[in-house]
Length: 342
Image: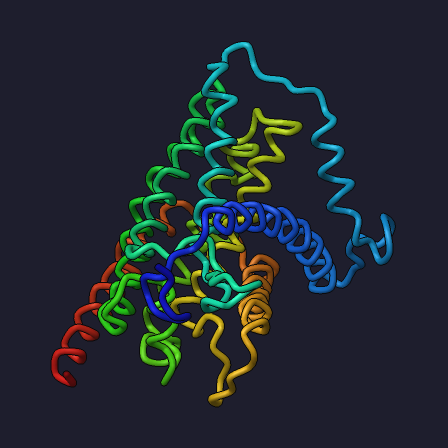
């Protein structure tokens, strides 16, 4: 049975789900090089220099050259490393990043060649829980990579990741609780539909800021890139990785930035909805989402060019003494407002 479009509970054909899986992986593979070249070009402009401008038109093929260089390097691992775990760790990081990317909704259910197709990989009824579950598994990619390398620098980077995880992920989760209470659903597409009157960026502004700041630590980005602090740990958890395995970590890190941008777009910026009551055709929805994601990704790059890396104790203090109380207060106030107004 196929229910009308836009109604929760419709069924997709099995071949549609296979095609969607292939498209998701293909889109992710294309977005990462785009973000790579964008970051290098934007950072260059911020620092009064040119970014890549030699390989291909305007330097746009530089990411391809970098990836090809890494993939053709000789695979090497230290004699003190744990071989199987050393190889598995980067794969865990990639698989969890792609799995998280699959739940980002790029549009509503559309009729394509007579088949109802949701413009997302899967619309799970526990979207944020699914996201945090795979985020927790992704941590093992970092942890195993640091431990299995047999290097003190790598192990210290992994230990930092463990301590960092519990200091920001609680706040990040609480930041989404306010949205869930307001939308009355855990479905990401349901949260987008609930923002038809007003994007949650406005009523949940505190939650938006908390989630965004915690996401810098989630993605190991400046100013919270303490697991890779080159001045202190050489390269952190991936110090002993090179070639294709390093490229895997590199790919996963940038894909996580894209995933976080997609989640912020979905949860706080109305997903595929446009402002001022504009309702474009369905094929426009993915482009609306991509533009919003590009804005958030640009902000990540801007922060990297602007802020210095914090000390480790500063991150711990900020996570426990600032983010967590604010996130708890935001959840409490949201619950009170929803109860009073309903």
